[in-house]
Length: 262
Ligand code: MLT
Image (cartoon, rainbow, N blue to C red; front, side, top):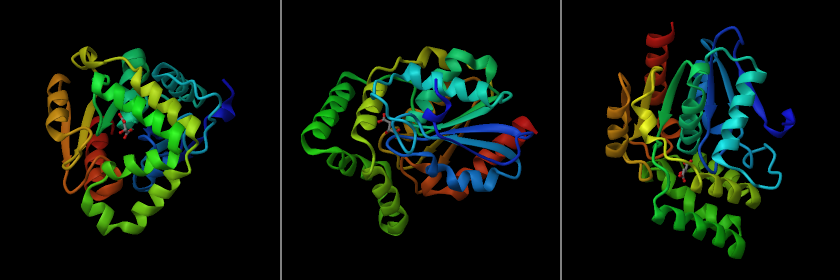
């Protein structure tokens, strides 16, 4: 793979414990700015734009969850990251979980944010197909403007309107081929639920109290399947918990990292 196809951003010193931040759909690495800012003095923060989104290459848009994990593995190998902690939100969590299933021996820990282990239900698959149809018939902006508001709590949309609109307008500029490629990759991903009870690396699960996509109750059930895992609820936040309530999110992740890796 050509290195320049995936845009990678590092903050902090490479001698420190590495954390790889994997963003959600249809966003980019900017969603982790409030985390990398707080963690950069203690950890080596590596964030990247998933293929098809942000400033990474779109190519032909023929992505799979497996090729997303190949990209993640490429980053770990190319940057010689020693047992990084993967911190992934939603689609980023799918990549982290499948990545761990494939190569847990290369990883130090997991932070699973607002995500799930199950693959799409039939209903979910049909919804992905409807999304692609909307993009083809009415444009990517129509799809994004319907999808993104569901990712945030009403209090964030109304109370932090400027920040919300910045995130939305960036997403609205997404490449339709990249967005469709991500939808198909998510639609075709495997179910990693049976792997949960086999996880042997420290794992923290984080969920926004008002998450509509991956509700609290579902994430708590997921946590019960992971041995010795920790769980934090992020008050007042929807699906984008690190963006919506960075104060509580950052203190949870710092506490976890300090306890497990210092
Ligand atoms: C995300 O936030 O990454 C998406 O909601 C994931 C999905 O659509 O399954």
